[in-house]
Image 1 (tube, rainbow, N blue to C red):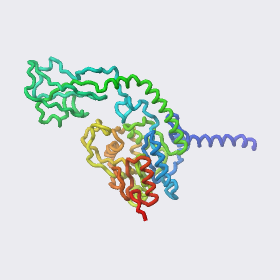
Image 2 (spheres, rainbow, N blue to C red; image 1 turned 45 degrees about the vertical axis):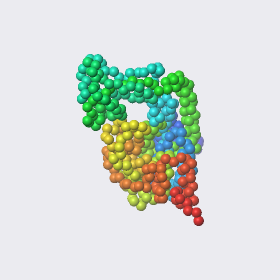
Image 3 (spheres, helix red, strand yellow; image 1 turned 120 degrees about the vertical axis):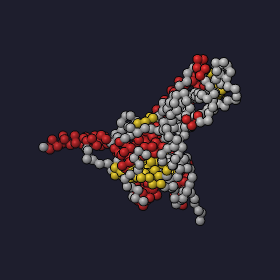
Image 4 (spheres, one colour; image 1 turned 180 degrees about the vertical axis):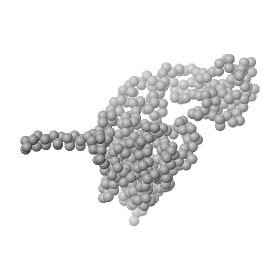
Length: 431
């Protein structure tokens, strides 16, 4: 019998070790990406550790400076706290994949779309739009004509043309030509309804040249070398991220390309991770450039009983106009204003809201930004909103603030230094 025990003992140790490694293991799809579902399959009654609050910090792959600033300020304070250290879980949210298109070769700096230009026509004027000859007879001064186009590289419009009728008479008075940002809901061949009010006639067609065409040509010719250097940079970035994850064990890698346009997808993936990986009451979302007073947030949750179900606590923007251009360009949401959404410095949602988002993540439509996407998603279920101006929406410092956005790593460190010294990050009265 003793011999059998000697033989079985290493096997039992091996099984336990294997299951323990399974809990800590990371799939090959990304550096350090955690997924505890495998252990749950072996032990369906096993429950993960319970936390009062899970903190998810959206972070870009290259923002290691901001992450370290957080680790050295309020995150360090949390770890040293005698009670909160065991009740709060903090994780940085990072996309597993870097964009494989160099920044200079993207359509815009916020996505990962290749600027697909080949064989540009240089040093000559290009007629962007012409009207077929057999259609000129139907033109009249009360007809609206629109041209839909997308500019991917700077151009110079050298001529705004006027349509002429078959007799060559044309319009008999001055014409004003206006350029409008195209609306997604506009029908083919017509301007959006609000642009056509009071319009008697619109001239059409234009001629343009490519601005700095030689620079564009040089950029295209050096693209191959730039792509090669960029891929080498991504490989080094992966190595550094894996090392960072192994050292601090505070990163959740989610299976998306890490760009600004994909931030809503990063967040939905993190919601799925939290539901699988931990038990908790509420979730706090913030960004890596935000000052956070986590102890004050925790105390306020208890004081206001904000750990209840169906809760959304933040500082909400109401009737916020939809931008059609720039970084926050939105072409998918048809309304002129967004539903209420919390500004990006931070908000808290209850576990049942997180579970709804996680279970519906494959069906929820992604919009241009994480904050407005969240507002649109929440409009579907209508959680109880708790307005709190102490979640600051702009970069400013106010006594008693819960959060404030848009700081550099050095500024975050200075705010926390003042807070530790004087109890208030905004002022320090010398005695």
